[in-house]
Length: 482
Image (cartoon, rainbow, N blue to C red):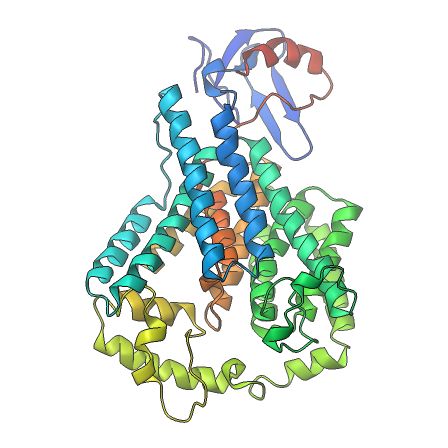
C-alpha cells in the first residue's frame, strides 16, 4: 500500500492505493460480488496505483485461455483416462507454460507469487523423484512423476495468471458451466434421450440406472460434481438468484441419481463443512437463507430417493459387483498394508501399484484390483510412509490459508474460497473409498480449487460499475487503474 505522506488511518481492500485530497471522508465501492470500504480520518479519496494494474498481454491471454481449454477438454473425454488424452493434457499445459514464460521474459516481470503450499509441494516432488530411483518399474514411475509435475504446473499457472477478480469470476463460471452441462446431459442420457451418441459407452456394459454423463464411471462423475456444487453454492449464498437456485437443483438431482454412495456421503460432509464455516463467519449475514437452502436441499433429497433404484442402492453397500463392494475393498486394503510394510520408505515407485500389488492381493478375491479404491493407501504404497507427513502438512497449510481468506470482506473472495475449500473437503473424504485423484479431469479440477484457495487475494480491474457518487470515483480512480 502506497499512501501519501502525513495521511494515515486509511484502510482499503483490493489493491495498493495512494491518496488525493478531497472533501469526501469515506467511500464504498460495490459491484455484483465485491465491495471495498475505504475510511480515512482525513478528507482523502483513494486512487489505485498505476503500477499495480497491468493490461494482460496477448501471450498472457494465450496462457489463460489454454487453461480454459484444458478445463473443458478433460471432463468431456471420459475424464481423460486414456493415454492419448493424457498426452493432450501435457501438450496443453506445455503451451500454457510456454506462453506464460515468454510473456514474463518479454516484460521482464519475474516476480514469483509465494503460497503456503510451496514447501510441502517441493517436498512432495522430491519424494516422488527419490521414489523413482527405487521403483520396481522405472518407466511407469517416470510418466507418473511427469503427470504429477503437470498438476503442479497447473497449480502455479492458476496462481500467477488468475490475479484479478474478473479472471477469478470467469474461472468459477467456467467450472460451474461445465457442471451444469454434465448434469443436464447426464439426466438426458439417464432417461434415454442422449443427443450425442459418441458418449454412449456400450462396450463398458455399465448399468443404465447409474447416471455417469460423459464419464465411464458414476463414482467419477460424482467426484467431479461434489467439487462443482459447493462452488455454485458459495456464489449463491453471497448473491441470491432464482436461476442459480434452479441450476443448483439440477446439479443436486444429477448428483443423487449418480447412485454413488461415496459421492453422496462426501457431498453431505462438504456441505456440512460449509455450514459450519458460514455459521462461524462474522461477515455472513444470510444465515436465514442458508437454513432455507438446507431445508430445500433436504426436501429435494428425500423426494429423489423415493426412486426405487436409489433406495436399493442405499441398501446394497456390500452386495454389488466385487470391485464396488465395501467388503472386497477392505479385503484388498489388507494386502496393500503388507505391500507398504515391504516398501516403507520409498514405496514401489509412482505409478507402479497395478504392477506391484499382484502378489499382495489376498485370497478370496476373484477380480484384480488395479487401483486401491483408496487414494491414500494407493499413493502411500507407491511413494512410502513419508507421504503421510507431507499430506498432513499440505492439508494444514491449505486450510489455514483458506480460513485466512474467509476473513476478507469481499463477497467474491469469500464465496469462491469457501466453495473451493468445501469441494476439496468432499474429495478428501471420497478418496478414502475411491480413486478420483487418479482421474485426470478430477485431479486437475482439484488442483485448480487448491490454487484458488492458496492464491493471494485477487486485485480489482477497471471494468467495474460504480454506485452513487460514481462520477467522483471515475474522475479519480479510473485514470489510475493501469
